[in-house]
Amino acid sequence: MNEQLHFADSGEAADLAAFLGRLVHYDRAAAVRLQAQAGGGAVAVFGRPPSFDVLAVRTVRLAAPLSAPLDLTVSAGELLESVDEGEPAGAVVPAAVTGPPWAGLLPPRGGWTPVAGLPGPEAMAKALAAAVAEFRARDEALPPQHRTRSERDRIGREIWSRTLGDTELPLRAVHAAQSLGFLRPVRSTVPAAPTQPGAPEPVALFASGGWLRLRTPYGSVALRRPGGLGTLLVRPI
Image 1 (spheres, rainbow, N blue to C red):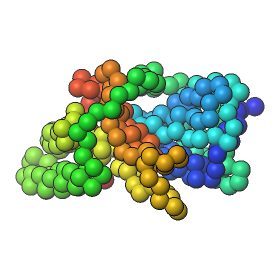
Image 2 (spheres, one colour):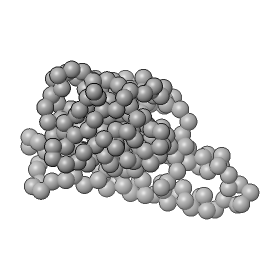
Image 3 (cartoon, rainbow, N blue to C red):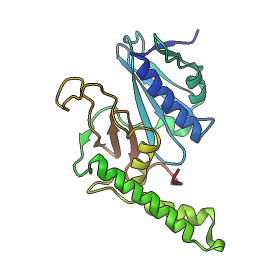
Image 4 (cartoon, rainbow, N blue to C red):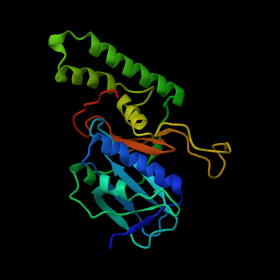
């Protein structure tokens, strides 16, 4: 019998379903890697949307700690189909699948240190909007004979590899975070100061070894520093 996951509440289930749905939108055959420690209160769900050259991480809080560790790669679509957003919220872990290469190259669990220089959410949104507008304008300005995939990819690589603020973080990471639903207002009925217990963590940038991680209240986007995870093919959506 496949293992059952019991989520802390229906909101956790809904957020996981939304994340999985976006991954499947980009790749109907998408896989995700699940990791949880025995006695831990959350499951980390790793995915890689093919157009952004990043790893996306959504952590799902559990109603009770797992009695045994969990570490396997499964179909994102099958996991999505099993998510129950009712009460109690949960999901059935599908059968394991052969993992894609990225599933064996996950970011480190620890050693993350804060990186200064990340602009605020409004500045990030403006930078992203400006990049999307520039891509569209340059694409529309291409003469018909030059409107090819390779030329559009070249423009995309130039724009989305630009770094944000005074950091090494490329714009494509912010684009990925927004497209995956990680950059959005936090659900809260009572505003809480960032220093209060239980308050949502602000958007922040961290580094560990050769990795960067953009953390948001809804998930993280991790990527290698220059020379990282492969070919970049990002287009605005």
